[in-house]
Each structure stands twice: as C-alpha cells, then as structure tokens.
Amino acid sequence: MFLIHPSKEEINDGLEAWGWLDFSGKEPFAVTAFGDVFFDANDGVYFLDKVSGELEPVCDTKKQLEEILNSADGQDHFLMSELVLLAREHGLILGYGECYEFKILPMLNGEMVFDNLQKMDFKVSLHIAGQIIGQVKDFPEGTQIEEVKLGNS
Image 1: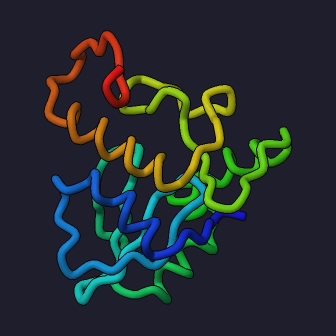
Image 2: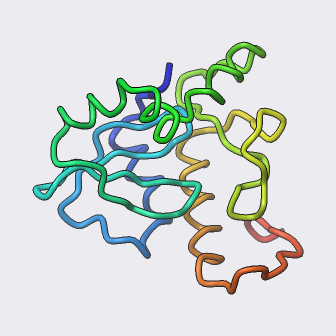
C-alpha cells in the first residue's frame, strides 16, 4: 500500500525531467505511493524526494532500508504513511500506474494535507515535478510564483 510498481521504462521516462540531478551509477528499485524513487548504488541507497527536489543518501544497503521502512519514523518520513492511510480511508485508492500527488506542490507552497491530494499518472507526476522543481530550485526564498503553465498553454 505504501509502494507502487511502475515498469522500469515508466520510471526512466519520468526521470528524464530530473536531468539536473546526477543519477549516474544509481539504479531505481522501489517507488513510493507518492512517486518518490529509491535507488541502489555501489555507495549505498539513495532517495529521490519529490517534495524537496533532492537526491539524498539514506543508508548503506537495501537491508538497512528495509529496517528503516519497518519503523514508524521511517514510514512517516519516506513513505508519508499517514497521508497514504488517510487517502485510503477517504476512498482515494490508487489504480495501476497511479501515485498520489499534491494539487499544489509543496515547493510552490502547497500544504502536505489530505485536501491537497489527488491521484495522478506516476510517470506524468514524476515528470511534472522534475520540471517545476528544476525551474524553481534556485529561486531566492520568498520568490512569488504567479502562475504555472503546462505545454503551450
């Protein structure tokens, strides 16, 4: 319930928009219900956090990650377990290829609450988040975003 299972091709397609991060030597192996991605590498396990827009080291091995994700703190931090459970309680159940996404991304001051949740195609969610975060990550704190446009609109 806390992980989804997109194909390797779907993951790689979604990651195209994250080219400003270095994924060299890192192989995706797990995806959270929010579309965050865990990577295995020679130097450990990494986590692509779509909220912060960062690729962060987590631990040395998949076994250690399993132990972390079996803890309440690990589930809360990496899997956003409370929001997943709340969404499911309210009938927001993911179908194949879907993940949870914030209607307004936290990077754009969206709140991390149930009322700001929606279901979205995983690949689209990962791609859009990568594009938006890639464009705003270097803005000075407090920069006002007037509007967001998708495509040629």
